[in-house]
Image (cartoon, rainbow over all chains, first blue to last red):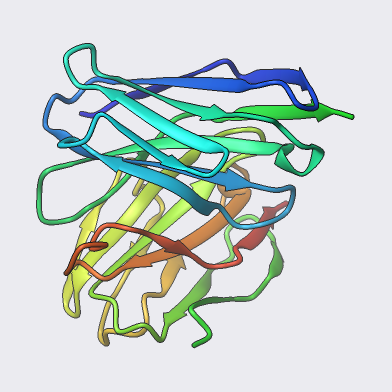
Length: 113
Length: 115
């Protein structure tokens, strides 16, 4: 079945620096790749997603890139702020009728003021 | 719209007890999902449903059962609680149609402890 690996498990950056989180997936039929942000004790919230027919997508300070050949995708956060501190999860979903997601293990991002 | 709602927020069970975690959505979504999140870990899919009357197993279905008698509700049943089922349980839904068909919306979660 599908497997999604996420790195690093923890990331500490200075406020204003950039942060990059990387994920690899195993199922070449995967075609939808969302990123979720989860604050402590809260539900996961979708922050950005990308589909396999697109190589890059940007939304203000957040961008996601996808390399289908290498089967990896990355989250880029620029000009980090303390409120970006949270756990970030990547996920992948294959082309079928269920849209079920397989999640990575998460990255704890700490933005130091 | 309330979105996806879950009850209860917290629950402590004794080993061997049973309970039902409730999940409801008011977005008329066809697809619903149950995940569990162990401390410091990612989310694992337990069961999912693509419509009323249709359910299927996810990655970690053992020890759980589900039903989907209506579009709105998707309860998760634990029959014989075990300490390994201590976790936070999230319900989610997606429309299954249109441009954002696979975008999943999560409920607030149920924190379950089995002692």
